[in-house]
Length: 190
Length: 236
Image 1 (cartoon, rainbow over the protein chains, first blue to last red):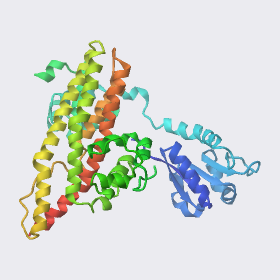
Image 2 (image 1 turned 60 degrees about the vertical axis):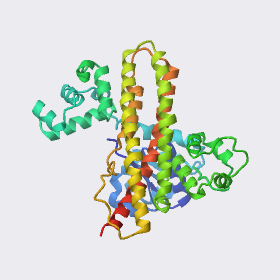
Image 3 (image 1 turned 180 degrees about the vertical axis):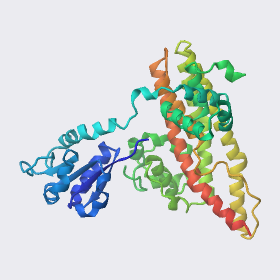
Image 4 (image 1 turned 120 degrees about the horizontal axis):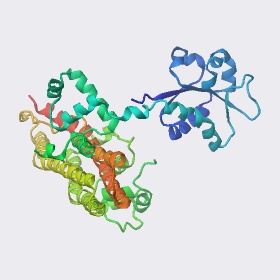
C-alpha cells in the first residue's frame, strides 16, 4: 500500500552523500535515497523522485531543472551563501537537530497523504458479508457462490479486510467479528 | 548494530542485549558469566564458536542473515539448534504467555472480549504445539536420516518425496497468528482491563514473535534448501 518514497541526492561529494543517506534512513525510513554525482546520471528517471537534495554548485549548473521543482528541492548551503532564487535551504554546518527540523515538515507532510482517509477504515457492508463467510469457515469458492460474486472479487475483499483491520489469520478475524457483533459466538461453536 | 565477535566478553554482550539471555539459556549457558569471552564460554560448553556467533548475530540483527555461512554448518547442528528453540518455546515461552494472560484475564473484571483473547491464544498454542510435534516426530528425524544415509552410501535412493512441512515462500502460520494476537490487542481492545498486565502479555507475545522469526528464517532459508539439495543428491 505504501509505495516507498524516493529522494534523489545529487551531490558529487561522497561523504555528503553518505551523511544524508544515514540521516534519511535513520529518521525518515519511508524514503529511499538514491545517490547521483551529477544530474546527467539520472535525467532519464528524473521525475520518479519525490524530493531532491543537491549542493549549491550542482543547483546552479542545472538551475532550469531545479527551478521547476523548487518546492521539492533542498539545497545544501554554507552559512550565508545561498544561490540566487532561494529554494529550500539545508545549512551544511547546522546541528543535526536543525537539519531534521528543516526536513521534517515537508517529508512527513508528504507521508500523511499516503495513509488512507480515516473513514475508509470501516468495513463496507459487502466486506462484512465476506467476513461473516470467512469466519463461518467457507472457502473462497463457497463465498463467491453464496454471495454471487466472482472469485477475484472475493480475493480483493479479503485483501481489503486485512488491510483495514490489520488482521490476517482466520482466528484473528473470528475474534474481531465476535467482538464487534458481526457474528455471534454461538454460531462459531456450533 | 556491531557484530558480536569471539574475543568479546560475554557479560558485556549480554549487558548490551539482554534479549540474548533466552538464546543462551536454551544452549545451556547460564548467567554468572564473569569475565569470560565468547570463545571461552563456547569451549566450556563444547559449542562451535562460529555457530554460536552466527546464531547470536542473526538474532540481534534482522538485516544480517549470512546464508552461505549458515549452510556450511552441519545439518545436525542446525537441527539441534531448532530443536532446542522448540523445547524452549514449549517449556518456557508458551507457559510464560499463558501465565501473564491468566492474570490479565482474572484481573480485568470479567471483560467478555478478553475471554475471546484467551480462546485465540488456546488455538494458537494448539497449532504451535502441533508443528513442534511434527518437527520432533517426523521432519527432523527424516532430515537426519537422509544426511546419515548420504554420509555412508551416497548412491542410496531417497525415499519417495517426503512432504515438507511448509513451502518456503508461503507465509508462516505461526508468525501470522502471533502478529494478529498482538495487533488485536493493540488495535481492537475494548472495555475494562488492567493496563499493566496487558503490557506484560504483549511483551511476552512480542518476544516469542521475534524468536520465532529467527527460527523460521533458519528453518525455511537454511534447513529446507539443505534438505532439498540432499534429496536431489540421493535421487538416481
